[in-house]
Length: 292
Image (cartoon, rainbow, N blue to C red; front, side, top):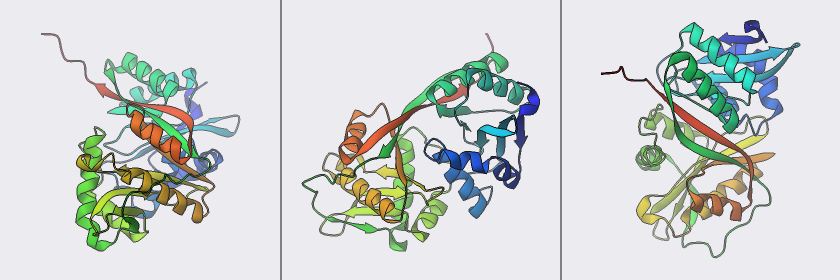
Protein backbone atom coordinates (compact mmCIF):
# COMPACT_ATOMS: atom_id res chain seq x y z
CA UNK A 1 0.00 0.00 0.00
CA UNK A 2 1.16 3.52 -0.75
CA UNK A 3 0.06 6.87 0.62
CA UNK A 4 -1.57 7.63 -2.74
CA UNK A 5 -4.16 4.91 -2.07
CA UNK A 6 -5.94 7.15 0.43
CA UNK A 7 -7.78 10.12 -1.13
CA UNK A 8 -8.46 12.65 1.64
CA UNK A 9 -10.58 15.74 1.03
CA UNK A 10 -12.80 18.33 2.64
CA UNK A 11 -15.07 18.38 -0.44
CA UNK A 12 -18.23 16.38 0.22
CA UNK A 13 -19.33 16.27 -3.42
CA UNK A 14 -15.94 15.01 -4.49
CA UNK A 15 -16.02 12.36 -1.79
CA UNK A 16 -19.50 11.14 -2.73
CA UNK A 17 -18.62 11.06 -6.42
CA UNK A 18 -15.64 8.92 -5.54
CA UNK A 19 -17.02 6.74 -2.74
CA UNK A 20 -20.82 6.95 -2.98
CA UNK A 21 -21.23 3.72 -4.91
CA UNK A 22 -19.02 1.90 -2.40
CA UNK A 23 -21.08 3.18 0.55
CA UNK A 24 -24.32 2.10 -1.13
CA UNK A 25 -22.90 -1.36 -1.85
CA UNK A 26 -23.14 -2.39 1.83
CA UNK A 27 -25.90 -0.20 3.27
CA UNK A 28 -26.12 -1.99 6.62
CA UNK A 29 -22.44 -1.74 7.56
CA UNK A 30 -22.28 1.78 6.12
CA UNK A 31 -25.54 3.06 7.61
CA UNK A 32 -23.96 5.90 9.61
CA UNK A 33 -21.85 7.07 6.66
CA UNK A 34 -24.90 7.08 4.41
CA UNK A 35 -27.21 8.95 6.77
CA UNK A 36 -24.61 11.50 7.88
CA UNK A 37 -23.41 12.38 4.37
CA UNK A 38 -27.03 12.67 3.24
CA UNK A 39 -27.71 15.12 6.09
CA UNK A 40 -24.59 17.10 5.23
CA UNK A 41 -25.68 17.31 1.59
CA UNK A 42 -29.21 18.45 2.37
CA UNK A 43 -28.69 20.60 5.47
CA UNK A 44 -25.17 21.96 5.18
CA UNK A 45 -21.70 21.00 6.36
CA UNK A 46 -22.16 22.65 9.75
CA UNK A 47 -25.21 20.67 10.82
CA UNK A 48 -23.24 18.56 13.32
CA UNK A 49 -21.11 21.34 14.74
CA UNK A 50 -18.47 23.91 13.95
CA UNK A 51 -15.33 22.93 12.08
CA UNK A 52 -14.67 21.57 8.61
CA UNK A 53 -15.65 17.94 7.98
CA UNK A 54 -13.03 15.59 6.58
CA UNK A 55 -13.61 12.67 4.22
CA UNK A 56 -11.45 9.94 2.80
CA UNK A 57 -11.63 6.94 0.47
CA UNK A 58 -9.19 4.08 0.02
CA UNK A 59 -8.76 3.07 -3.61
CA UNK A 60 -6.92 0.04 -4.85
CA UNK A 61 -6.77 -1.24 -8.45
CA UNK A 62 -9.28 1.42 -9.47
CA UNK A 63 -11.86 0.33 -6.87
CA UNK A 64 -12.86 2.03 -3.61
CA UNK A 65 -12.67 -0.48 -0.76
CA UNK A 66 -12.99 1.67 2.38
CA UNK A 67 -13.97 5.15 3.52
CA UNK A 68 -14.10 7.47 6.49
CA UNK A 69 -15.54 10.77 7.59
CA UNK A 70 -15.27 13.09 10.54
CA UNK A 71 -17.62 15.93 11.45
CA UNK A 72 -16.01 17.99 14.24
CA UNK A 73 -16.29 17.70 17.17
CA UNK A 74 -17.20 14.06 16.60
CA UNK A 75 -15.04 10.96 16.35
CA UNK A 76 -13.49 9.58 13.19
CA UNK A 77 -15.96 7.13 11.62
CA UNK A 78 -14.41 4.25 9.65
CA UNK A 79 -15.76 1.51 7.44
CA UNK A 80 -14.13 -1.90 8.10
CA UNK A 81 -10.36 -1.93 7.41
CA UNK A 82 -7.65 -4.53 7.51
CA UNK A 83 -5.01 -4.08 10.20
CA UNK A 84 -2.56 -2.81 7.57
CA UNK A 85 -5.07 -0.31 6.18
CA UNK A 86 -5.99 1.00 9.64
CA UNK A 87 -2.33 1.42 10.59
CA UNK A 88 -1.53 3.22 7.35
CA UNK A 89 -4.47 5.60 7.75
CA UNK A 90 -3.42 6.44 11.31
CA UNK A 91 0.07 7.24 10.04
CA UNK A 92 -1.22 9.51 7.28
CA UNK A 93 -3.62 11.44 9.49
CA UNK A 94 -0.91 11.89 12.12
CA UNK A 95 1.53 13.20 9.49
CA UNK A 96 -1.13 15.65 8.32
CA UNK A 97 -1.35 16.99 11.87
CA UNK A 98 -5.00 16.06 12.30
CA UNK A 99 -6.28 16.04 15.86
CA UNK A 100 -8.78 13.31 16.64
CA UNK A 101 -10.97 13.06 19.74
CA UNK A 102 -11.65 9.39 19.07
CA UNK A 103 -12.71 6.74 16.60
CA UNK A 104 -15.74 4.54 16.00
CA UNK A 105 -15.81 1.52 13.72
CA UNK A 106 -16.33 -2.20 13.51
CA UNK A 107 -14.69 -3.63 16.63
CA UNK A 108 -11.40 -4.94 15.18
CA UNK A 109 -10.93 -1.87 12.98
CA UNK A 110 -11.52 0.52 15.89
CA UNK A 111 -9.10 -1.35 18.15
CA UNK A 112 -6.33 -1.50 15.54
CA UNK A 113 -6.70 2.15 14.58
CA UNK A 114 -6.75 3.27 18.22
CA UNK A 115 -3.55 1.34 18.93
CA UNK A 116 -1.84 2.72 15.83
CA UNK A 117 -2.96 6.27 16.63
CA UNK A 118 -1.58 5.94 20.16
CA UNK A 119 1.75 4.77 18.78
CA UNK A 120 1.94 7.71 16.41
CA UNK A 121 0.71 10.49 18.69
CA UNK A 122 1.31 9.32 22.26
CA UNK A 123 -2.36 9.69 23.08
CA UNK A 124 -4.07 7.18 25.35
CA UNK A 125 -7.06 5.35 23.85
CA UNK A 126 -9.93 4.71 26.25
CA UNK A 127 -12.82 2.44 25.33
CA UNK A 128 -15.94 4.61 25.28
CA UNK A 129 -18.40 1.84 24.59
CA UNK A 130 -19.32 -1.19 22.52
CA UNK A 131 -22.39 -1.31 20.30
CA UNK A 132 -24.10 -4.01 18.30
CA UNK A 133 -25.73 -3.37 14.94
CA UNK A 134 -28.98 -5.26 14.41
CA UNK A 135 -31.07 -5.90 11.28
CA UNK A 136 -34.82 -6.49 11.45
CA UNK A 137 -35.99 -9.97 10.44
CA UNK A 138 -39.62 -10.85 11.03
CA UNK A 139 -41.24 -8.10 13.06
CA UNK A 140 -43.02 -9.30 16.19
CA UNK A 141 -45.36 -7.02 18.11
CA UNK A 142 -45.02 -7.60 21.83
CA UNK A 143 -48.17 -8.53 23.70
CA UNK A 144 -49.77 -7.21 25.69
CA UNK A 145 -49.14 -3.66 24.50
CA UNK A 146 -48.89 -1.02 27.20
CA UNK A 147 -51.84 1.30 27.67
CA UNK A 148 -51.90 4.15 25.18
CA UNK A 149 -51.10 4.62 21.50
CA UNK A 150 -48.42 5.85 19.10
CA UNK A 151 -48.56 9.14 17.28
CA UNK A 152 -46.22 11.24 15.17
CA UNK A 153 -44.47 14.08 16.96
CA UNK A 154 -45.55 17.54 15.80
CA UNK A 155 -44.47 21.12 16.36
CA UNK A 156 -46.31 21.21 19.70
CA UNK A 157 -43.89 18.53 20.95
CA UNK A 158 -40.75 20.51 20.07
CA UNK A 159 -39.73 21.39 23.64
CA UNK A 160 -40.32 17.80 24.78
CA UNK A 161 -38.18 16.44 21.94
CA UNK A 162 -35.38 18.90 22.67
CA UNK A 163 -35.32 17.90 26.33
CA UNK A 164 -35.40 14.17 25.57
CA UNK A 165 -32.69 14.58 22.93
CA UNK A 166 -30.33 16.03 25.54
CA UNK A 167 -31.32 13.43 28.15
CA UNK A 168 -30.76 10.61 25.66
CA UNK A 169 -27.23 11.77 24.86
CA UNK A 170 -26.43 12.18 28.54
CA UNK A 171 -27.71 8.64 29.18
CA UNK A 172 -25.33 7.19 26.58
CA UNK A 173 -22.37 9.20 27.83
CA UNK A 174 -22.47 11.88 25.13
CA UNK A 175 -23.28 14.88 27.28
CA UNK A 176 -21.77 17.39 24.84
CA UNK A 177 -24.12 16.95 21.87
CA UNK A 178 -22.77 18.39 18.65
CA UNK A 179 -26.11 19.09 17.01
CA UNK A 180 -28.39 21.84 18.27
CA UNK A 181 -31.39 20.18 19.98
CA UNK A 182 -33.83 22.63 18.44
CA UNK A 183 -32.49 22.06 14.94
CA UNK A 184 -32.58 18.31 15.51
CA UNK A 185 -36.21 18.45 16.68
CA UNK A 186 -37.25 20.67 13.77
CA UNK A 187 -35.67 18.40 11.18
CA UNK A 188 -37.24 15.26 12.64
CA UNK A 189 -40.68 16.85 12.90
CA UNK A 190 -40.43 18.06 9.30
CA UNK A 191 -40.21 14.56 7.83
CA UNK A 192 -42.19 12.68 10.48
CA UNK A 193 -39.05 11.13 11.90
CA UNK A 194 -40.13 10.80 15.54
CA UNK A 195 -42.99 8.74 16.93
CA UNK A 196 -44.18 9.15 20.50
CA UNK A 197 -45.94 6.64 22.70
CA UNK A 198 -48.54 8.43 24.78
CA UNK A 199 -50.70 7.22 27.64
CA UNK A 200 -54.51 7.24 27.36
CA UNK A 201 -54.59 10.75 28.83
CA UNK A 202 -52.25 12.01 26.09
CA UNK A 203 -49.00 12.19 28.06
CA UNK A 204 -45.89 11.31 25.99
CA UNK A 205 -43.85 8.63 27.78
CA UNK A 206 -41.39 7.36 25.16
CA UNK A 207 -40.03 8.18 21.72
CA UNK A 208 -38.42 6.39 18.80
CA UNK A 209 -37.09 7.86 15.60
CA UNK A 210 -36.18 6.70 12.13
CA UNK A 211 -33.66 8.17 9.73
CA UNK A 212 -34.66 9.01 6.15
CA UNK A 213 -34.38 6.10 3.72
CA UNK A 214 -31.00 6.05 1.98
CA UNK A 215 -29.79 3.24 -0.28
CA UNK A 216 -32.76 1.16 0.79
CA UNK A 217 -31.93 1.28 4.52
CA UNK A 218 -33.57 3.03 7.45
CA UNK A 219 -32.07 3.14 10.94
CA UNK A 220 -34.15 3.32 14.10
CA UNK A 221 -32.64 6.09 16.25
CA UNK A 222 -32.95 7.33 18.88
CA UNK A 223 -35.08 5.26 21.27
CA UNK A 224 -35.58 6.92 24.63
CA UNK A 225 -37.79 6.52 27.68
CA UNK A 226 -37.19 8.64 30.81
CA UNK A 227 -35.68 6.60 33.63
CA UNK A 228 -38.73 6.81 35.89
CA UNK A 229 -40.99 5.43 33.12
CA UNK A 230 -38.92 2.42 32.07
CA UNK A 231 -39.94 -1.20 32.52
CA UNK A 232 -43.54 -0.65 31.41
CA UNK A 233 -43.26 -1.74 27.78
CA UNK A 234 -43.27 1.73 26.23
CA UNK A 235 -39.90 1.41 24.45
CA UNK A 236 -40.79 -1.95 22.92
CA UNK A 237 -44.16 -0.70 21.71
CA UNK A 238 -42.86 2.47 20.10
CA UNK A 239 -39.86 0.70 18.56
CA UNK A 240 -42.13 -1.90 16.99
CA UNK A 241 -44.28 0.92 15.64
CA UNK A 242 -41.45 2.80 13.93
CA UNK A 243 -39.99 -0.49 12.64
CA UNK A 244 -43.32 -1.20 10.99
CA UNK A 245 -43.35 2.33 9.57
CA UNK A 246 -39.89 1.81 8.08
CA UNK A 247 -41.07 -1.33 6.34
CA UNK A 248 -44.15 0.53 5.12
CA UNK A 249 -42.04 3.17 3.35
CA UNK A 250 -40.21 0.44 1.48
CA UNK A 251 -37.02 0.04 3.49
CA UNK A 252 -35.19 -3.09 2.40
CA UNK A 253 -33.17 -3.08 5.61
CA UNK A 254 -34.31 -1.75 8.98
CA UNK A 255 -31.38 -1.32 11.36
CA UNK A 256 -30.59 -0.18 14.87
CA UNK A 257 -27.63 0.04 17.25
CA UNK A 258 -27.70 -1.00 20.88
CA UNK A 259 -25.29 -0.54 23.75
CA UNK A 260 -23.81 -3.96 24.54
CA UNK A 261 -23.56 -2.92 28.18
CA UNK A 262 -27.38 -2.85 28.34
CA UNK A 263 -28.67 -6.45 28.28
CA UNK A 264 -32.26 -5.28 28.68
CA UNK A 265 -32.39 -3.36 25.42
CA UNK A 266 -30.51 -6.09 23.54
CA UNK A 267 -32.99 -8.71 24.68
CA UNK A 268 -35.94 -6.45 23.90
CA UNK A 269 -34.93 -5.75 20.31
CA UNK A 270 -34.29 -9.43 19.64
CA UNK A 271 -37.79 -10.23 20.91
CA UNK A 272 -39.17 -7.71 18.42
CA UNK A 273 -37.33 -9.46 15.61
CA UNK A 274 -33.90 -7.82 15.29
CA UNK A 275 -30.89 -10.04 14.58
CA UNK A 276 -27.18 -9.24 15.14
CA UNK A 277 -25.11 -8.02 12.19
CA UNK A 278 -21.82 -6.67 13.57
CA UNK A 279 -20.20 -5.35 16.73
CA UNK A 280 -18.74 -1.85 16.85
CA UNK A 281 -16.52 -0.04 19.33
CA UNK A 282 -15.85 3.60 20.12
CA UNK A 283 -12.61 4.92 21.62
CA UNK A 284 -11.77 8.33 23.03
CA UNK A 285 -8.21 9.63 22.72
CA UNK A 286 -6.80 11.24 25.84
CA UNK A 287 -3.59 13.23 25.83
CA UNK A 288 -0.84 11.71 27.95
CA UNK A 289 -0.22 14.20 30.76
CA UNK A 290 3.32 15.45 31.12
CA UNK A 291 5.26 13.72 33.92
CA UNK A 292 5.56 15.71 37.14
